[in-house]
Length: 299
Image 1 (cartoon, rainbow, N blue to C red):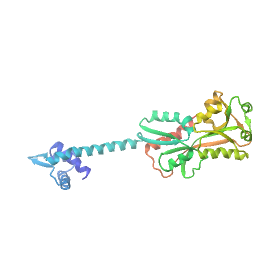
Image 2: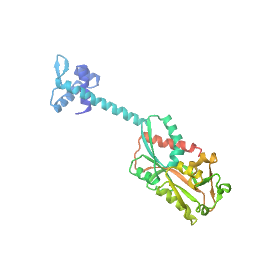
Image 3: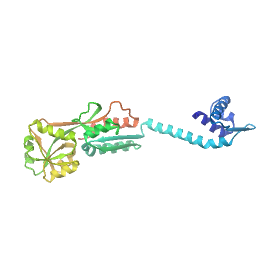
Image 4: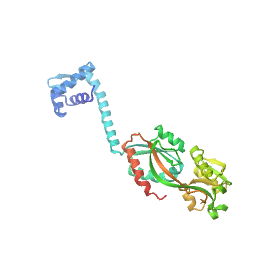
């Protein structure tokens, strides 16, 4: 059973004439007759009976008609859906991102994208770096956003922005007045660690190893806002991205310290995707949007 046979069947039933149906479909009458004959042979039923020049549906034809219409409507709907997808203005993009980017960078971008492309749905999840790599690798999400301290050689990458990493203390902490400190000094202070993610833990520990020190981890919290609140209350210091503390720095609640015994800590935030993944036009539109809009952000 072919779609063109159902189209012919429906048109003959509407017009009641092989000749008029042939004219309507820009076909010859023998072609119309041949298509209907093949359809009847496959179904084992006569679909039309001739009364003079008029073709009328048999009982089998009347039974088939609503089913054929349902099939043809589904085909039309499928074509319209594909046209929307091909336009790049309809579809879904799934993203897994690290917390600092999700909370402090992406909201403005996602709002701009929704205004420009309201029919493209963006689904965002937060996770640790290791989990994001696995989610992208297994196609649980289309895109990931991670820090450059991750092992990402197997993925295609797009640099988004650079983020300075550093220690923060509360405004009345003794180190806050002089700002310039040694990491070896910080090792003697209680550290409020962001997250339980292995990749970030290893990254923080590697900083202290550079100066031959071991941090005194007192608290581990998955929420970056909770970490900042703990530091504000004087319970210790933390090491977080500067983009995550801009508001607290501006309000004088947190003070960024400058370690003098290690080089500046700069992390590249990257978008990653599977190298062999095939993206829809909507997903490609979102990727191009990030490429063009992220450089405009004031970070």
